[in-house]
Every structure is written in C-alpha cells, then in structure tokens.
Image (cartoon, rainbow over all chains, first blue to last red; front, side, top):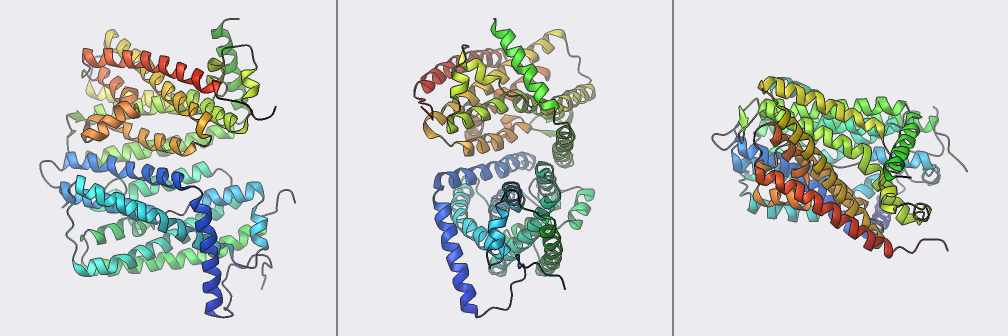
Length: 281
Length: 261
C-alpha cells in the first residue's frame, strides 16, 4: 500500500491515550496564545456574524405580524435566528482559506514535516477559537433574546440532547469543509468555491429562513446536501421544534455525513498531497 | 494637467491592468450569478408567504436588489480596490511613492486601482431594475430618472467618503481590515429597504454605515416614495461627508511618517 511518509492522516495507534491528550493540550495552549494576540479582531468577527441573522429576523418579523408562518410566530422566529447565530458561529471551519494560503506560500511543507497529523492540529486549533468566540456569541445571544423577546418552547430532553447535536454538527462541518478545502490542491479560485458554499448554506441550510418555511423545491435540494444537518438541525432542536423521532433521524443523518466526510477527506487528502509540490525551499 | 485628465489616465491604466487577467471575468461572472441566486431565492421564499413586505411589493423589491447590485458593483469596481491599496500602503510604508507625486494626493490614492470585472454586477443590477419596473408597469418620467441618477451619485459619494474616513484611520491603527468585514456584512442589509429594520438598526444603517443613502433612497425615487426632505438630506449629507472626509484625510496624512528613511 502506498503511504505518504510525510503526512500521516490516520491517527496511528496511540502509544498511550495520555500521550495524545498531552499533545492536544499543548496544541490547544499554543492556539489560545496565538488567538489572544488578536482579541479586538475576534470581537469584530463575532459582531459581523450578528448582522446576518438580524437582517432575516427583521424580514420574517414583518411577515409574521398578522399570522404565523409555517408554525413560526414573531417570538419563535427570534428564538430561531438567535440560536442559528450561535450554531453557525460554532461550526465555522474555513479550511479553504487556510489551505489556499498554505499552498501558495509553501508553508504547508513546514506542517508536513511534523510527526503529528495536520488535520488533528487544525481540529484542536478550531475548537479553541470556537470556544473563545462561543463565550462572546452566547452573551450576545442573551442580550438579543431579551431585546427581541425570543420564545423558547424547548422540552428538557431537547436541552439535554442539544450539546450532542452541536458537537456532531461541528464534526460534520469540520469534515465536509475540510474535504472541500482539499479542492484547493487542484484549483485556486477559492472565491468561487466559497461563494458556492455560502449560497448553499444561505438558501438550503436555514440561514435565510427555517426549512419549514421554504418552498418544496428548496426543501428537496436541502435534503440532498449535508448543510441542513450542520445548521438547521441543531437550531430546530434547541428551540423545541423537533419530535423525538425527527431528532433521532437528525443524528443518523449527521453520522452518515460524518462517515462520508471521513472517506472523502481520506481520499482527497492523499490525492492532494501527492499533487502538492512546495514552492521555494 | 487637469485633474480629470489624470483621473481618466489612471482609470484607463487600471482597466488595462485588469484586462490581463481574463479568467477573472468568468470567476466574477460565476460569483455574480450565485449572488443573484441568493438574492432572487430570498425574494422567492419571502413572497411565497406574503404579497408585500412593509408596503413593498415584489417588483419593487426587485428594484431594490437591482440598486443593491449596481451600488455594490460600483463600490467593488472603483472605491474598494483603491482604498484597500491605500491601507496596505500605509501599513507597509509604501505610501511614500504616491505622496511624492506632484498631484493632490487624495485624488491619486482614490483612483489608483480599478477592478473592472466587478462591473458585471452593475449590468445585472440594471437588468433587475428594468424587469422590476416593467412588472410594475411604472412610467418612469425624465424627472424620476434624473432624481434617481442624482441620488445614486450622492449615495456613491457618501460611501466613498465613508471608506476614505475608515481607511484614514489606518494612519493610527495600522491594521483595520476587520472593520471592513463589518462594512461588508452591513452592506448586505441593503438588499432590503432599511425601514423594515428595528429603529436602532435603522439608525445604524442610515448614519453610522450609510447603507440607507446608498441603496434605499435611490430606489425611493423610482417607486414614488421620495420626499423632498429625504432628497435634500441626501444631497446635504453627501456634501458634508465629502468635505469632512477630505479634511480628515489631510489631518491623517500629517501623522504619516513613512517607513524607510
């Protein structure tokens, strides 16, 4: 079997669990220190994430003035878009930009020389920044919930299951985004790739409107894509829109896409690394 | 040599420079098409549930999206590239090369770069407005068209001044690219008439980030919503912003000390 010596994607059998935990901890500390250099930038980043849900919340608030739309009234719309803001912030990955930069500047070589998987490093790095922004975005959500009088009708079991749905959503998002990020090994028009991704998530994953509100054609497309299981599913669970059966179905779909993501990433990473040749040296 | 001639020369240079990268045209075309899908998809979803949004009908909102595309295209073609270059030059100290030239620096730094392919958005915007107005069956008189063009110019002037002020802050804060991300996400709000937003957001979009004057007000001229007050306000604000940004720029450049030397 052909194996890339420089780039072990597969996490090999650990020497001990402790070794890997230590490794992740060290990586997390480094990431945290790097992130903390740009505190003001992080606040501005979260601020820019608040605006989009507010735009669509305003639109739907007006439409729901007289009667509810697809089972949503003004206050449940508020709850939906506020939770959507959190879920979206917690599932951002952005591997495409990272790899575009790494390949163009040749810095990918530095990472490949390390004896630890770059994917694992990126995962830890992402989890750290997500926890930092998570604090800010949750505080923002609380303020917005009061301003817009958001109404949550969430049963206890949904509250309990939400963290798991969000964690799996993050993993799904990480693997799918990372897999798509591998396309940078073949093309550098990332603006076009990212615009495609944005379109898919705005229209077919619940960013513009809850899926129940979408026309049938949009719903059909949404079902074919992984993005609704990343964004809409945890959001609807958190505001108490899902039955237990629908929730189970959501978890199953997340796992299906996680497996697809693993397979896709494995294949594209190996193919991509073989294509890659460093610039400079 | 007159300033107009210099501006013309730089714009021509910028266009020629961009024409070297023809694939970018197709990338831009693809991107604009996706932007169009999002905008029209949004309208389709919204008007699946209602016949008017705060008094705005679907064809009228199509015109809003059209102006959103036109102004966005103009910003992307003419304003943003030069301003980003300016901020980069301030950061790296290479602004020296522009300052040394014997012309009014503000004019020079405002026209140094052009991204001509962004004009695709202007084309799309014009088509959308045409479709919207045809659906409305509106008779656009000469007066309305004239008002629209004047307000569009005023709006672009306000956005230009706004960008110049933001970019001037780079003299003190060096790295401000994150603020631009905020502007871009705020500009998205212009896809809908600003009066649908809650009061405090309306205020922000009118006076802090001038999305209202850039997009909503010109559309008001086309849809018979324009009041005399708004018209005078827009012109006055444009004049004020142009003057204020000019003086702020002069003030800022005095604290620039270059990088080498």
